[in-house]
Image (spheres, rainbow over the protein chains, first blue to last red):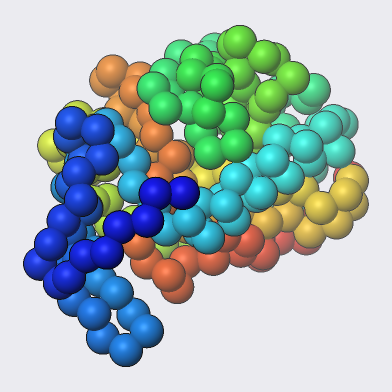
Length: 84
Length: 130
């Protein structure tokens, strides 16, 4: 891992188009600003990992309801449109 | 009927897959299926969060809005992934990371919303029977 020391107001450049700036250091929290083209998604790592795990669970689970899914909410009939 | 949806960056956990098809909502139904055209084994059930959580709202960031080329909310189709716990168990919906599709272009993105109060596993308030 590349390790760089930066002060508030200083930045690093990743590739040609991503700039990460240290905005503020307060106790054990650091505020970062990320300038990147909108085609480059930027996420908090732990949230991203949770979404990866939930997506994998969702994909794995669709086979569990392979029969037409009949669920009642206030008289509305819900049906799995595309049984696997 | 299916609508083709292209996720340029894939979706988290399946970033190698970019082309999907979205089934229509069945008459009187809620759940739709988003299935990979490149790997048909990969499919996820999705549904409108407003079918279950009428007060739900999602605030798209400027990069996400621009990435999907959306100018007004009406151009967007928003659906949340659904996870089934076993064949009889409860159903959860991911309200934190909805799938947003530009209705016109078919571009899609799974958006990780900034609002930390939105649960990744929200229990659907429905009774399951089959």
